Image 1 (tube, rainbow, N blue to C red):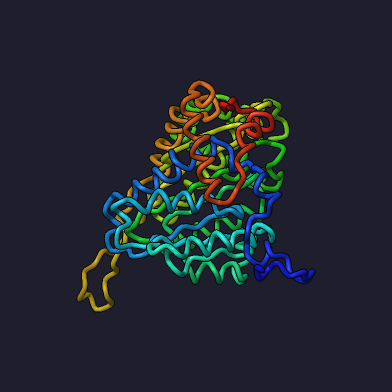
Image 2: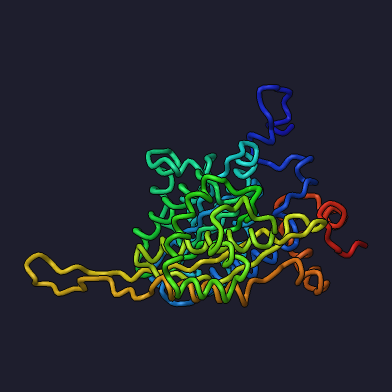
Length: 393
């Protein structure tokens, strides 16, 4: 008899062991969609590998990942599988720190965590905590104790189900970015940010605060002209109106919120003398049956040059100032040019490339099998529930 077969109502075997329940094994989540696998490969893993290939991580023994995973730790499992066979990870370990705010998902994650920790090139310090990302709003919170004990990070993956533009989330994100920009020098690191950008899910209070950014850029002709070139509808709103509520057209709202969010991140990085580059931007629709492409997945690159201050006696010359030269205007030009020319619609691409869709369907099925899912109904679910056109035998 198995240990957990005893008839004891005090214990739930799945909760104690972290196993995926029989119900969960057949329940497919939004992060199980084929397009999410495309994003994992083409944005997250590809850009993570690029910074490791720069050679700047030669003396870094543990490469730290921070994310908001589901209970199956699917993102972490995929990132690890993509890194483990690369020459850049040889002699190094991957450390990961996950925060999960759902108790059941947290309990399920413990089983996946134990399997990952069995791998030789996974740091034994890796952990998944039952916490809320928004607890980072409070600098004396347990969430911050965990971040300080584990961080700083080289790859941050914040995949929000809804809109990042709410007060608690933005404060928490601000503090996390401040911590990173203070702590990481002479190493590039990435922020992957997935969020919905629409009027219904954005907090009015946040939009009111963004007026300060609008007021600031209205005095900068270089930035305004770049916005006008890249986002004509959003430019008109910023120039003529102060009330987001007055906007009716969803596409204009979406453009405007992209401008404000990206500007906020650029200004924060430049203020901390970090170079910041928007490396990738994808968009897609939450609901394929009702498309509005208001979900966005961004990859931002950060890097700060290390400096050595002279000693008080002047014996050591050092570098008195950070030689960072990127201006806000330069950062805006690069970021908005990217948004104009490379804002890739994942849904449209997979619609037109059924063979590529099949590649990511197959990859997704393989990952789910490793996590203990029954995938016999996966294709039918993706077609009927989520609006895909997967091949069905």
